[in-house]
Image 1: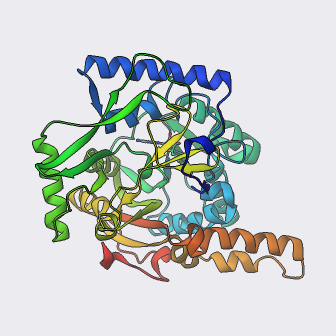
Image 2: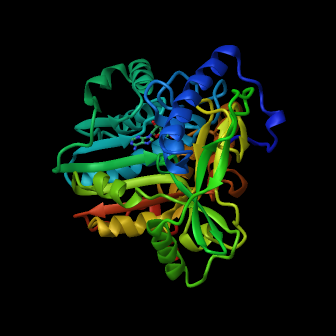
Length: 406
Ligand SMILES: C[S@@+](CC[C@H](N)C(=O)[O-])C[C@H]1O[C@@H](n2cnc3c(N)ncnc32)[C@H](O)[C@@H]1O
């Protein structure tokens, strides 16, 4: 995801009356949950409601989200070159296992699915089926429209699932910017140990949007959280200092196990922004990694604009690798997005366009830069591959494999 940095609420565009009314309805729902819970709810629960409350959450209601008229842009929306590279990685795995299914988690507008299918058709390597697991009914409809417009003749290969498939899946499971959307727990190190940061209601009158009458509060002593933070510190080999605030994903191990379970043979491939554990909990990153995207502004206050803005946290890829190993998967590769795309043949795709065709060539160069430059998406984003039952060096990690950093 990319947007223009901004910190102040004041600089955020005002939502229109319909959006304000929508946000107020979600806020009512959150407020009753806070009341029922005795005054505060965990941040993970707040994030779940803000993003996924049926009919109200950011991903479950009408917000535009993707593209210039929305809140953020993802790599597949920036350039088809991203999806074409992913398609090449899928082809390699599918060829090795004699064909199979691609399952995409959280498919956004469906543009990545369409571009992957188009590329695989060109390479004569179509999957038997392209399955999509999408939580949002509204996004499913958008994905169907995108695929109907861009690849009408391949629509019959695409299936939308209501749940993860039964065990026995052969193929590739893909997720671009899905891990960063999993609800996180926020904690702070206090003189008496780590405390959960919870979300409380602060007033009786509804505040004016974008404010929301929600505020942070320190939760009671929580042995489960203390154990999680102790495990993180023990793996790091250092204690997090007093005042240090960060996040972890309580459901990560269960989520990875559930996603890995159906896979009999093949690979899981996730691309997202994040770090190894040592970088994630680096002393300098003392206020965590929460980021919110609203109309192409990025800021760090998740308690405003409920239902109208995306809320994300960076991914601890060491935690993903640990969860994957515990689920019986092999770590097959970890690298920055730029090296992953180079390994998949990005520069060959650039060379397809004749440099004498200046307009097309320069446009492709621009897209390559956005995807690969360090200040852009190139090094903030990482790719991780987790496999079962295949012993194959993956092309995406042939340029550089940084598994050792996890
Ligand atoms: C930031 S968007 C990324 C969309 C798309 N992959 C892209 O790159 O444009 C996050 C997506 O993850 C989906 N999502 C979040 N949690 C999910 C889960 N547990 N299972 C499947 N999809 C999920 C959301 O509905 C949304 O489509």
